[in-house]
Length: 590
Image 1 (cartoon, helix red, strand yellow):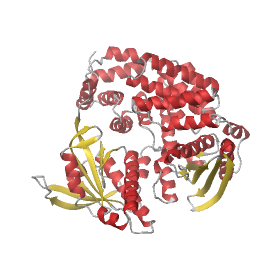
Image 2 (cartoon, helix red, strand yellow):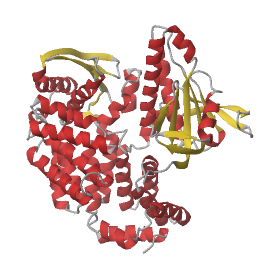
Image 3 (cartoon, helix red, strand yellow):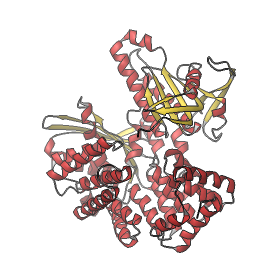
Image 4 (cartoon, one colour):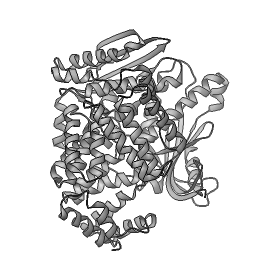
């Protein structure tokens, strides 16, 4: 049975390019390329701020957000970036964008969003100046005033197709402020900031200079592996990949990027492949003083790519730190695979998002090919494991039970092949925490952090492990440290931190991360935690509201079933009782 359209209340952003016809008349081919690039960059900014770019309509873009603050943040962030980008162009084909933001009911079907909210956002966008933003009054009222935005009252405007006038505000970013920096700051506590006493470095995504867009995954893989290697040096503070990669294609100066990431040093580069030859350009920049510390160009036979990555990571680390521990150097030389063809399939698998059954199958096929070429490639088994997990969640392929069994088999196989890869180790640890096998989990998570003390993912899994064994205080510390290392973290970091706060009975602290989590995902777990937290705070009406949302998506939920599923994941009976008490007060059925 096909899924019908979804109707809901949302925050809509509508953007279009000003004077697109005139740009096309200047240079049709270049104008289309520039407009496409503009919306690609905007789509990436939208994703960074938790939004969804639903569709491109020629010279216009429509996006959906859960919160008006996220939509405004994405809009002002992009307009600032696009202004800098356009200033760097040497011709007159400079796409400027107008943006309108409104709240309203919409219908979503086949990745297309329609409804009154979209039309209102479009009408507001038409009021904006080039490079400007217009915001509906109702949406304005929901944006926290602590955020670094300036507003101009534009009064009540009569809009085509709407009977009642609409209050409108113009929005800009306050001078000297940063949207992302403001968002990140709320996740950082004083103790965690002590981490930045170490030299901090971010590796930006390497440019694909091969002229073939299909080779982008190879350039990403080179930069990604350098991040992994450098993270093993205990003398460095290395920003996580998904934070530094969020700046892909953004025309921003290095100092601004570094400030937003909390990094003193920036490593950037490019990769060009031609036949059996590979060229990698790389440069290290001291962002605080805005000068280059070192730059190098490497030309090698492509078979030498692994040695080349070693050379780059070691040289950069020694330039920044001055000296490195011998043991860390040896660990950084360890590779996922020495078989170049297998490595290529590994990178291909990692580049595919398994969001459909076909894509998930393609990713598995790539990992299976890597394993066929190199049976000792631990990361291929690890990647295959994750896509079996997706199969299980989505009821694709074999039965969910069999998918989970295959995922565990692959995970354990990966760990047996590679004792020097922190990602392999922490993923095994996570599987064991979910099975309630904490002794096994402890060995693997300790090993992951021994290998790579800067692995933010390992730290947040350590938080899950510590919450499970009843050590809430240290669980909080681990999760907070993870969010400093990875300021633009995946949503599950926030749920892990919120669960640790809940276990520590720090209810006020739970609200911000868990509210953020439920706005970014649809997992009912977040709503259950929010309901239990509100109930423990005595905010019963709000708890009951969250309970109703959960029961709508999980009509068979009961406290008895919840106790059964959670019994293995919390070793202290008092922690489990604490959860049950909160859910019972919220009104969940026995």
